[in-house]
Image (cartoon, rainbow, N blue to C red; front, side):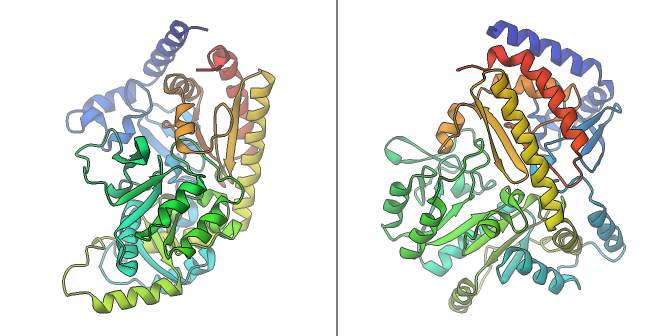
Length: 451
């Protein structure tokens, strides 16, 4: 199949999308009078469609658009709705709290219950709340610098930790740190960030040996440059190297909360000095958390005692508002259950196995990586780092496949081939997707060879 054939399929699918969604088109045109590209947040235009798909309702693992079309949702708000759209436990908690106050900048009665639940689920004793994982990561980087007295941080190449300036970097020639391309108004001084490739233990150890790195900020599994799994022993060696060199280890579980109850670290025994989790942690309400050990807490108290008076540079007015607290409490106690994670992991494993079988049946050199309820598929062998993963992506091909599936009632994450299974996802929905995916592969398999 040629590039011209791909273009023809894309034209056909774009026309099918547009002709079936006049209400979304009308809403987009009306919204464009006040929102650039007709969307209130620019990521919402990244679906490869001629105009945005406007949502009327979202419940469980389904969406209904403005034209009444139903979709089985495997994107789930790009992880924010990992436990399903509008989970009943969270919706009920929000409804009850809404008439008792939305924000006060004072601790709500739920506060001690939330602290106890966080400690029980994630295994760390000390916690703070923010509104987003970006906020949490930014705070943790500052706190790590405060307690270590060191200026620099280390991240892995093509990482994603929200939009924290220090992490929006890539590795250039000779290991030089460069600003990540595409940033608007990007920061030019990236000298305080060290970048190495994920799974490159010698490079990691060499960087930490300099003794000036306050913390390593890492996902235990890279998830935003395609999924990159840690090689056997790498995370244990990362923990050991951080301890040896007096560097704090920050584990960002925002995406790897899919691993199981308490995230990847709790499931595998990886011990973090700081833990960050956002997006789905409060069932879809804007909320994030960061936790830390007793040792870090003691060091923070000493740093606070020595701090000169003035604004700390941490915190936002609406953080830990009563709505966030009750949603977080409901999520921790009623969504993050062993039973829910077992259901999610079991269906995700079935989905991943069936997708791999579909690739093999057609002789396609594609693979599936999975972390609990989260999976991604891509061309070639499983990558060892972000650079390898990005090099295997054919954005035009995969975008056309996503649009094909969307037109048949199935949503995948538009940025890459990420899929999530929620507690509300059913075996029937997985079976229906696999039927549509089989048709999709039959249509596109001629283009799915080597790039």
